[in-house]
Image 1 (tube, rainbow, N blue to C red):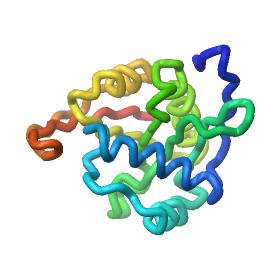
Image 2 (cartoon, rainbow, N blue to C red):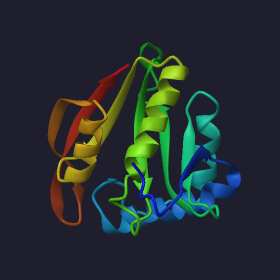
Image 3 (cartoon, one colour):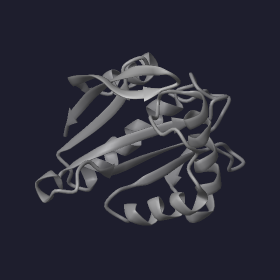
Image 4 (spheres, rainbow, N blue to C red):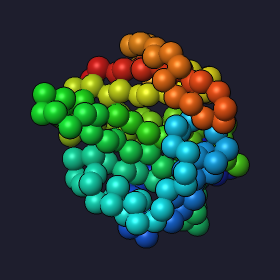
Length: 169
């Protein structure tokens, strides 16, 4: 549950939210292995990402009582082949200074609800194996370990493992 001292609203993202979404994401590109992207995302790329999502692949933001974006989440196509059309991949990113307050749990719960409402069957999370907080977040939400790929990423001079977690809806 979000920190009671920070009233939070989760709503669909808009084009106006993209600079904040991009800033949150790019912090992790530069400082973390929670994304394997190594170069910051450009605004042009972020706008194209937003338009690719459309109605069937939700993007949400969590805001405080004055509208400041504290985090975001999305459901993305898992794979382009048509037989995967009922499976989505989720992403959850929080502003680095508001972690540990239940915002990730709230965003993930909203994404799960939206995935159900949209008729998806499965949600997949690809998580760097060293990101214990993200693994725990997904486990608490009912995701189970579906597999581990060893040394498939290379960032910050180290080989990285990815765990696949899955929630069947």
